Amino acid sequence: MTDGVHQPSLRRLWPLWTGLVVVVLLLGCGLPALLVAGVVRESGDRATVGRIGASATDDPATAVARGLADRMTAQLQRQSTALLGGDSAGFLSVAEPAAHTDLRRRFAALRALKVTVWRPEPSGLPAPVVGKPGEWRLLVRFQYCFVVPGCRPSPVLIGTRWRENGDQPRLVALEESKSAETGTRPWEISDLAVAVGARTIVATTPAQRGKLPGLLAQAEAAAKVADGYVVAGAPPDRYRIFYAGRAEWQRWYGGGRPQWTGGYAVTVGGGHHEVVLNAEGLSSSSADDLLRHELAHAASLPERGYPGKTTWWLVEGLAEFAGAGGQPVDRYEGLAEVRKLVRGGWDGRLEGMTPADDASAERVGGSYGAGYLAVRHLVDRYGPQRLLTFFKAVVHDRKALDAAAQEAFGEQWSTLHDECVAYVRATAA
Image (cartoon, rainbow, N blue to C red):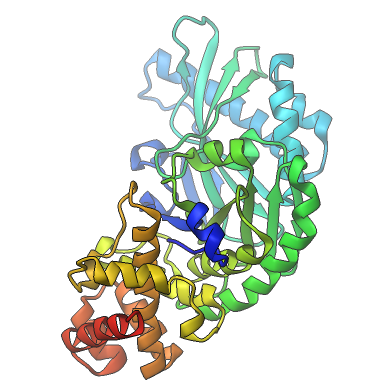
């Protein structure tokens, strides 16, 4: 999860490490089964919205709700067509004037991100809003793609509120998604400035717009490295990167990261991980390492997350190895922290390396450094391809370490574990 700033003095003042948000998505889209049952049908490789329609067994209230849901869906489909066509007036036309300010910002942000798919799928039936006669709330799963028309869409579940208005209900508000798994997406709540490259898309706030050219160049270079860490399937169609100022860091994807976090990757479904960098204290030179680290996560990790804390050292060690950019091991700037960890009573077990949220900067740096050195030893001995085979077996296929070690290296894991630990201790001596 972490990456270090490559300036020793700054490292101690502001140890920027990266955090990985691990999300286990239900049904491959992050939604409870109850919310989508009976609404979405599969047609080839695309999900399409089926008419909810009235059933002969519906009671009168349910029949009313089903009919209203159909009319709301029709309005959302009109709005989707307007968004994809760049028609701001059409996007706003389905909504009450009070919602226009928020909708204009969302429209502009999504257009800046080059949205290519925006598909609304109602989840369940609308429910009346308590205390507001004539208002209803409908949960909607929006499927979206950026830049690439044919991507596997990422889903986000958003509450929509409506006012009855005959055959054309009026949209009162789009709520923030605020899902427990991923939190609110940047384009829901922030104005965005965006730059798009061949392999990446980088977004930030208008106040940080001047940094986009440099960030895009760094992201494109990091993407070339990260593509080499794909262990299953194809590389991401675009690596999605959001550069957060102080306020945005506290709000995007729910905020609330440990104080030592300088960036993180969050899985958002559709095979995509969206990366967030903490602009505060991040220098241009440290951004290179941080981007390589985080994009390696986006390339290497499965959509459903990884097995748990016992494999944290491997997940983060691989990303640290990518972040190091091929430099000699003696130039890795976390060695001082590893040395303090080793001399501070470390029990020599890789599976217990995960730092606590309130861990000190030195403890965090030592943990990530030890993971890096363990992975470095395996790469030096067996080569990168066999390391990736091991990673896939453990992280994607969720095989036991013993079975994975036999498959990838032809060795017992207990033996390799002790060798890795000995390497960590010797290198940090």
